[in-house]
Structures are given as C-alpha cells and as structure tokens.
Image (tube, rainbow, N blue to C red; front, side, top):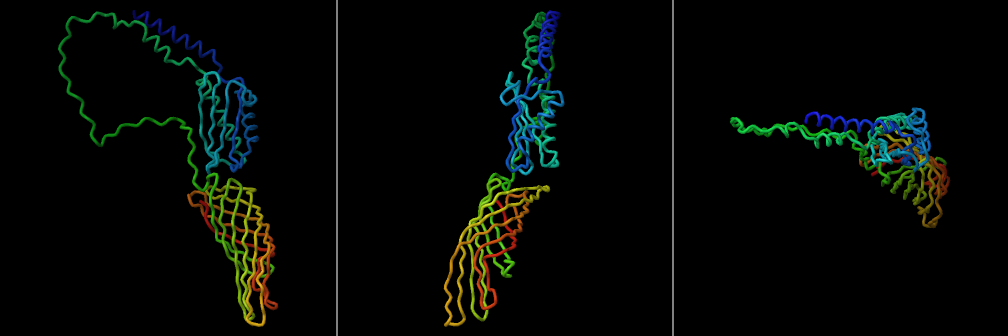
Length: 357
C-alpha cells in the first residue's frame, strides 16, 4: 500500500512538472498602460517609451498595443509629495495579478522614468511564471491524500497499554507575546499624501507691494484655491498718505488667475513659478486741507500682469509659503502739488507670506 501511495504522489508531481514546463517563463507580448499625475513632473509618453525600451532590451517581452497581448502592465504615478508609484502586472489567461509600490521622489528627476522602467521589468521577470501557473502544488498533495495509506490498513491492537495522564500546558502569562504574522510583501496601498499636496487646496496670504515709478507702498492680502497647476485668487491692496496739503486713500480689488509653469522639489521644499493676470477695479478718495479746494472721488478699471516665484514647505497639513513678484499694473496716482501721495498703477515688485491648507 505504501508503494501505491508513493506512486500516486510521483504521478501527480510529474503532471505538475509537465504543466509547469509547458508554461512560458515570460510573456511573448504585453500591453503597457501609464497614468501620470499632472503635477508630478513626468510625461506619460516618456514613461511609456522607457518601459517599452527596458522590457524589449531585457529580452523579457515584446510590447504590444493597449488591450492586446498575454497580459497588461499598468504603471500609476501618484500626486503625493513622495510620487508613490504602483506597478501592476496582470495575466489575461489566469486572471491573476501582482503588484509593486515604489517612491520616485528620492530619485533624480531626470532618472525617474528609468527607475520606474527597471522596477517594472524586474516585476515581470520575477512574478510572471508564478502568475501564469494554473497547476499549484496543492493538486499533488490532494492526490497523495486520496491514496490509501499503510496506517489506514494496519489492524489496531486489541488493547492499548495504559498511558499516564499528561498535565495541561500552563497558560501564557499576560506579559507573553505572540508573534504576529509577517505583512504581505507588497500591500499595494500608496502612502496618503499630506493635505497640502492634495488635488485642490485653499490658500491665504498677506501682501506688500512697492510701486517703483512713484515710490509708493501698498499693503493687502489675497484668498483663493489652487486646483492642480491652476491658481485663482481674490486680492485687495490699499494705501493712504497725508501731508500739509491734504490726504489720499487708494486701493484696488481684483480677481487673479494663474498657471504653474514649473515646479522643483528639494526634499520637503517645493519651488514653483506662476504667470498671473488680474482684472478688477481701483479707486481714489482724497481730501484737501483747504475748504476752497474740492477733490472728487474716482473709480476706474484695474488690471495687471505679473510673474510670481513661490517657495512652499510641503510636509505639513498647513503648508507655509513665501513668494516674490514683479509686474505692471494700470491704476491711479494721487498727487499733492509735486509730491506723490500714493499709487495703484505702474511697475511694481512685491512679496507675500501665508499658508496653504
């Protein structure tokens, strides 16, 4: 009977080996799909070319069009500060899938596409044979379990010898610890991005502006959302001055729209640049020290074009920001005799400080 059980086990293992040898160690064709967060600094076409080049040069696979091939390789670059990337390999025939996660922010920006391609190629080499196998070792074990075993046919003795009772094992002390199971090799869940790195965020800033042509300061603030690379702000800036001839108060309120044209990350520090355009209203209110002189209030159109450079600390829910700007505005100028009391137009430089949540 022992020989029959051993023969059944050998036959099952031989069938498993033959089935495994019939499976390809790597796919002959593979479909590559790439999704990239718009603010990550990576281009989907560049990543797709790097993946195709690495896979084909490595001799592992021939890359096919999307939707065709023995399986699919999907690469997803996240929008968080770490650029957490998930690579998923799925087999069309068996329906199985394997995946890896990696952090691209630690790599040099020029080498990130290459790093992602190397990781994807290693995933295909290491996981494809297992994912493509549909005859696991459990079938051989099942065949062995179904065969008769010698101990099942051996007659039992008429009477077993008495056995001394065994004392129960002592319970674990409260301080004893039980080893927890090891975590899976790859959970495939990207790290959660800080709130300041989400797809949209709300920002508020205090603002200081110097009108170069008229040596006039103005102070104010802005409030508004950022949505990916887009920026929208509601802005208010005011100034006032007084001398022996009278006083003047000037201000402007505008809606600003901008687009992020570059972003460079130095660890948790993000440096970016925005061109912005603004449109709104400007006003002038003046009073004269002499009752014989009358000053009429004025309201007009305000507009400006500017370039803004911003530095932001990203490793916090409330992200502090500092920015500098340069631009040209249309507005009013208040004069008393030959002296300028204030301005809302002309060339200007400015700075702002605030936070982004």
